[in-house]
Length: 341
Ligand code: ATP
Ligand code: MG
Ligand code: FE
Image 1 (cartoon, rainbow, N blue to C red):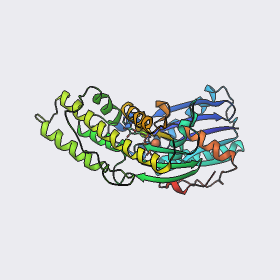
Image 2 (cartoon, rainbow, N blue to C red):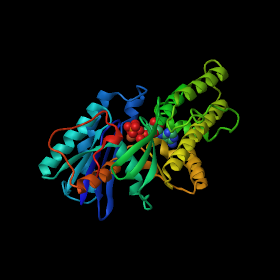
Image 3 (cartoon, helix red, strand yellow):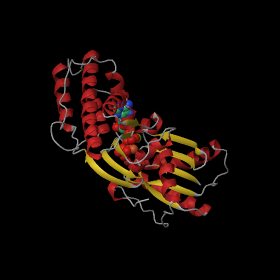
Image 4 (cartoon, helix red, strand yellow):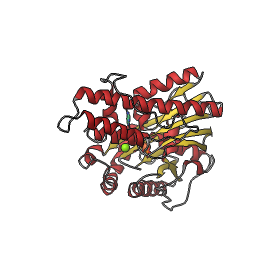
């Protein structure tokens, strides 16, 4: 079975072809990041318009890359939510129309289920059940994954998402949007132990997260060490390093709790922040102590992409799921309310 996957929930247009026999056949990504950088964040209306402009050419390129005639698929999957309403509508309308024209079913996929299943595209995929830590621009979720489609939330962020905390902290440091990856690069030059920030909520029971207090501590240190409104580069690197350490340790503590709570020996990390090198190292160390295995997607499939949507869509289309012609998008959509597969 071959599935076309379309991702358009935010500022990335992603398209991919997944084949159950041959694996991932092709994937293309167009990032709008440069366009939004000028405004310091994603402008929803511009995002929708850009998805309209890029989606069809990207679909053609994906079929060409796979050396397949346009439309040689058994189903089309698109991101139905959560995300920006206009951006989602572009993907949904395009996917539904193409599927109708090609005479195949279409199906709306949950964006976070896509992220969660992205490690399944790697050569050594995790077996079920496992704990998943989803850390992205809009979410920080610890999930008990009993089987594909069977998700219960163990913990979540009470305020900022992990990626959001990275981006907002980067902005305070004067880094251009989206600052998360840049902040982590700068942190590599910083020295450990010069600054120490609070590990939010690790002394409290439970598996929820909070990052806004950490952000405030960083803001205070930046203000304290600024000269004429600018933090010297070396100090900035030390602060970035301490911030990253605090985030990694907080996430590691909660992941350990989730492994102990569920008794599982497998931990999956996914979403944009799972590309972070120090997070991978920190979690690998913790997992080793817990005699558990750590799984993550290749870096390009940590952030938004069409491949994860094609894969998640295939799992559901294979099970006979798929809906009628209604666009059926859900800008807000809790992960633990999905239809079982
Ligand atoms: P969501 O998936 O919750 O809807 P999103 O799709 O915008 O949000 P992703 O594309 O999964 O989020 O991830 C983007 C986020 O990941 C951004 O906040 C970005 O700063 C962060 N990010 C990407 N790479 C890194 C890195 N190396 N270190 C830290 N953060 C990173
Ligand atoms: Mg993005
Ligand atoms: Fe995402």
